[in-house]
Image 1 (tube, rainbow, N blue to C red):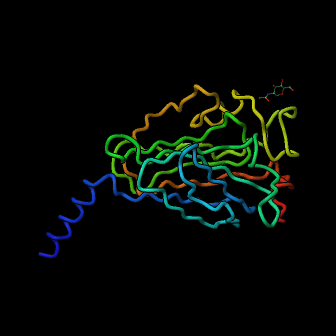
Image 2: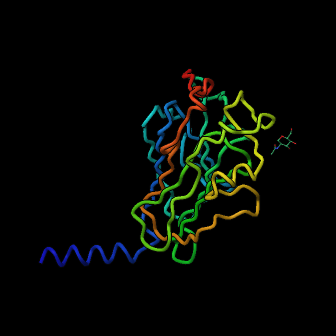
Image 3: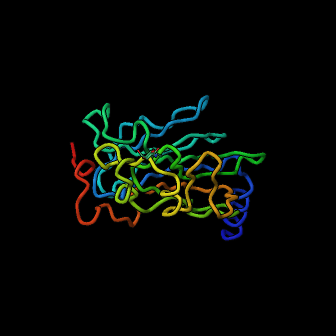
Length: 219
Ligand SMILES: *[C@@H]1O[C@H](CO)[C@@H](O)[C@H](O)[C@H]1NC(C)=O
């Protein structure tokens, strides 16, 4: 009897896409602190105060609105105490996660990508969890592209890289490196309960053994 009720409840939950809550989780696996910057696209509400400092292995959990929302996530590094000044991530060159949720007729479609169009600062991967259906591949760049960044394209004393796009695409094909670029894998993700953004997933954050002094500095 109780089992049947639970079964009905699960069916109801699965069929009401518009009310499926979606969480944005940001997990910092970098060995240095990161200050996430979540920016809504024009016309959408803010979902973060953008004051959190994530130490190594720290998590931040935010709630998307239950309606259509679009925006981006960047990773600021080397910020001062109030996060009013940062070494990288506030302006290009910087890695940018682009997200939409609760899109489409059923309000259950999510899209996501990692853009290197404006350059690179921190390795990022987006990994949908608890998905309702469709194809939800993990996308992004787990490699520290600052290491082999062409010397003339380095900025922020080697903590960010301007390109070129071919350099990014060769090493991180599951990203977007030009305005018309797409990933070579299909994506049609429905009703993810969680969009997980991981900074420095399984990545080597030192370059040839030399630590990235600027981003490692904890201010
Ligand atoms: C990389 O540096 C070269 C040489 O300075 C420059 O011509 C090129 O525009 C740079 N590429 C990017 C994407 O900034």
